[in-house]
Image (cartoon, rainbow, N blue to C red):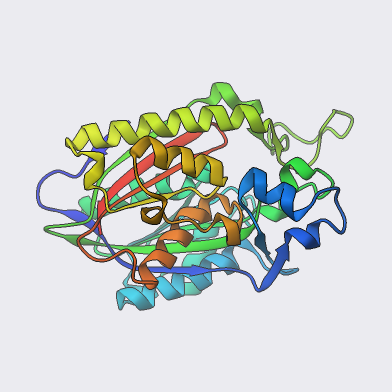
Length: 329
């Protein structure tokens, strides 16, 4: 599904923010309790460390800190918001949503607030929804990607425990007559469910007698890699063709930070040098829905991404879900 802003109203990113928990878990730390090594992890993923939420620290806590920074950057307060949209697959509770909890803490009571669960594509999906609110007349929309994915990690499974970290990123969208989100392209294929999934839910229940039962991430890494590279290639091409843009016109690629090899494969397909690709996976690990907004905020605050530049966001996650957003920052 592709959607494009029509007329003169665009959803411009007016402010960005991010938050990472204080605790850092390095590859050497992991090697103390699981059979792995810093070299093994870096060669296969590019990851050196990841941040871990403290005991009692929830997804809404991380989202709140990132949101405060984004609101400050945009020069507004919580009471100015017309909608709060959170991309997450690790909510504090089944209900109320992380967005409702966040809305209340920000003093934005009364506006629309809801979560979007598209796994690692959650922020891109939420951004697509937020853009529609702006087109529909909203003045300030908060979009957050936040996860405490390490709460789902099986720390005895070295194939998955080395990958994930916790964190949150946020943006404030405001209407603009000239620049902003140009289009979003969102896709999914539920036929790949068991290549990357969590086997526990509410209506499906919990059956401990079943193999692999429990709140944990199950993944077929090589199969996920193949599908991810293929689908990201296709959505990037779809996005560029939709606008008649040559890949050389892109200033920055900000990909989902899952695996350095996937990022490099996408950059190669775009013929983009890695110095025009924002990479945080080495320090953050895979923060799922948090990864794209975390990388965006870092790129903006470091001065790399500047106003007027053409930026491509893309992500791939369990479901499978995948998507892109092209924006003129």
